Image (cartoon, rainbow, N blue to C red; front, side, top):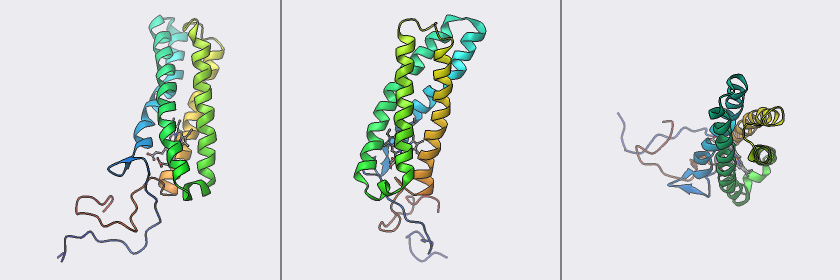
Length: 173
Ligand code: HEM
């Protein structure tokens, strides 16, 4: 039977570093990235359905997905950059720099898409379709590298070593 209300702490635990831009220790960047990820990865399917059906609804949907993907991506990137520049140990990992460069490339592609589609959202063949294909590829790369930061290097994860958890607080126990 347990003697105290304190959580048992495993002897071996990999080091983690807390986010500096967080809400009650939950990092904001991972909360915000879901919007650009969803919008920019649905862009290609929406473009393809438009190519298939010629129904203008899909061309307009693509336009809004691209625009919202860009705006929400820029907003989320601000919080990612704050963590990157405020956490010194994070900048020692090459994956932070890879993630940063890939993130900027993704946002540049999204901006290119807004420029390509602005005059006529229906004129997507061929360049806007190439752009949405590259966006999907870069979402996968950026997301993968972001996951490496969180799950691989423990960046933005509760600082287990120096904090005392309440009973319901500790993750994974
Ligand atoms: C371009 C500037 C960016 C920088 C400097 C940056 C930085 C970071 C950092 C430091 C983390 C670790 C977690 C944290 O401390 O918040 C992270 C995680 C992550 N980032 Fe970024 N990021 C950027 C842009 C983006 C964009 C545009 C996306 C997606 C479209 C993205 C997707 C992710 C994902 C999926 C994670 C992992 C979150 C999780 O595990 O739940 N990042 N990023």
